[in-house]
Length: 364
Image (cartoon, one colour):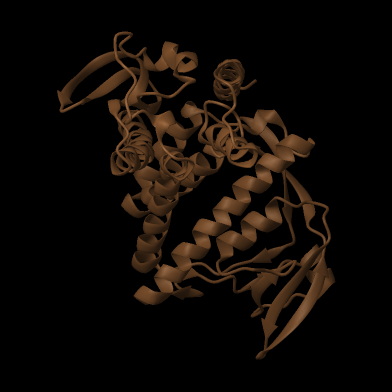
């Protein structure tokens, strides 16, 4: 339990810090006044002041914020972030007085930092651990793979035209597509062959989800040990880090689209409890697995923050885009109303994720 708690603090603390540092550094770079830098929301637990900025740890450890003065919709977030000094006079350093490019830079910087963090972590992990290529060691009899013509020794290089570099990527792609016909490109005896296969549906009880879930399997076995393992040069590691970062951005985006279109259930959403459980598991597995997990969560935070919901970075970018197109900002009254709705939606999603976590714990 101690390992799980410490790992959760490290994972969430580092990723929140990385995101907020992006906003903070960008705000300072364009001379926006920053009155508070907080890890967590709500009442201040402790902190210190340096210059114009108060650096604090707050009571609700589910995020963080950089409080920039002069944001017209700041009152909507006041319950979480606190209010500005009512006696403070407007200033050229106010956020809303900066040009659109400067405000866009500040808003995008948090997401950019999360993506950069993931890229650096994935690159380091790839260089340290290498990769396991999707080389097939065995084809299970009477499975879709055997029927499709897969053979031991085949190297899977693409699925539905998407390049596959590791066996984890192949496993994730196949498992998420039960009963979907796929076109798999394999390298065999120096040439490429395309095989059509439909993954069979396998049901099993997932301990983390605390539910029976369906996954797709075609019936191939990848080798254990060092067979299929490759160490990477620094240049190859950088390429692998970039590819893995983009791969996870796409995977998270696909999941969100499936949520919107009803192909995925809201019960699949996980919150801090699930992140804590997984953090503990990866921490016990070692430093590099934990860092890899942090990279994945960092990409999740980046993509989720780009959703066009007021309060999130994507909502701020939506307002800036409207301002750029029509030549004037959305009115303060409209921004306040939409931001309050966005805040309620985000809190609702957080409560849903918490409820899912609790139901998993009690077996619901």
